[in-house]
Amino acid sequence: NKKKPLIISTWNHGLPANEETWKQLKNGKPTLDAIEAGMMIPEGDPKVRSVGYGGYPDREGHVTLDACIMDHNSDCGSVCFLEGIKHPISVAKRVLQNTPHVMLSGEGALQFALEEGFKKENLLTPESEKDWKNWLEASKYKPVINIENHDTISMLVIDNDGNISGGCTTSGAAWKMHGRVGDSPIIGAGLFLDNEVGAAAATGLGEAVIRTAGSAMVVELMRQGKSPNQACKEIVERIYDKHKNHRDMEYLQVGFIAVNKEGEYGGYSLRSGFNYAVYDEKNGNRMEDSKFKMT
Ligand code: SD4
Image (cartoon, rainbow, N blue to C red; front, side, top):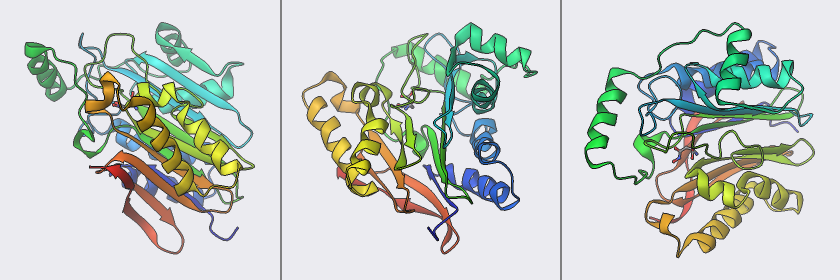
């Protein structure tokens, strides 16, 4: 297809991430390195309170990170419940490249990261610590829909060779229980791709995405011939049907982005306010608003 390369990333913080990934692809860097470099930008930005350094902690004050990466050979690397490492996407890439496994968690993921030369640092910024202490006063767990227009960053890439890869990184739901892992590091939930078909990734309330194997289902619908937009919409409708009488409904937001092998892309969310950054040769790097089911 003539539409390559193509990069699509969730939320406003997708723009600077796309910018870096595009630059690296144009410089001939390996696709996974390009994805990693792009996603490191929101991870390292303390103003982004939903990813990496400066992310909101869990209810015990721990910033615990989830990330994954997947390439066109269906090789995957993932870390979850990782503390003290600023760039979990980089550790996920090392899991893919340097271990016989797909996923490392918690202490084991940290041990691996340290062995790989990563430095342990404090990721709880004074701002996030202050917000956590404020939250503790009422201690009411009610996830915020479209949290400051960022949430998880998920990125899907069609590279110079037309191959599909993707990544996902997040500090997870603010004020989650200690040990909680969301959809973002789970291949099939927060991210899935099949290089023959396309790729999909999620943002929003991870529990709902895991319950429905969200990203894997979007890819399967594209395999059956649905467009990226149609496939994302159908899975959002399914998530709505499964949750309309569920306790999570009052704060439920989910959004998907998808690309197919032809270079078509799309997105769809349950509630309004979701957007994604798209970068291609023809139109450059820009934000697009997602279609949605309800306000
Ligand atoms: C998660 N999808 O961990 C991520 C991000 C999030 O509310 O915080 N959602 O569920």
